Each structure stands twice: as structure tokens, then as C-alpha cells.
Image 1 (cartoon, rainbow, N blue to C red):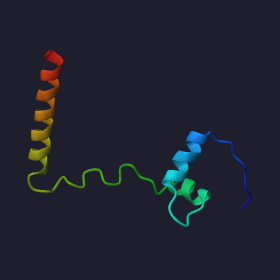
Image 2: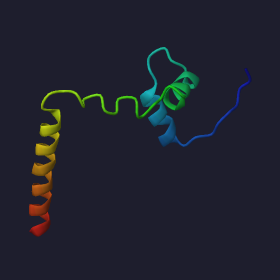
Image 3: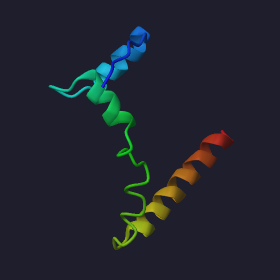
Length: 74
């Protein structure tokens, strides 16, 4: 497999370095962060069958909505 050189800003380098695991190359880090195994929907719905979860979410949403409305009214 060939290689390519990339130019990135210091900020981009530092962020990539922060995601780098011990013993992992930058190539491995980039592939891990951007690879096909990175499925953002993988855990979607995982809590659907947990007793009380929906009620807890709705209660929290109501509390947050009420708080935001109160803050907006000030």
C-alpha cells in the first residue's frame, strides 16, 4: 500500500493526536475514526425495551422544556 503526505493545521493535528490511542499510528487513528465500522446508528433504539426509560426521557424533556420557557420569558 502506498503512502501520501498531508498538511494539516496545528489545531487539526492536536485534535487528531488527542484521539490517538497508545501504540496506535496516525494512519490507524484516521482509519478507526473514519472507517466503515463507525456506525452512528449502531446503538439507536437500544434502550427501547428498558422499563421506565421512555417515561424518564419524557419527564426529563418536560423539565428541560419548562426550564427553557421560563428562561425565555425573563
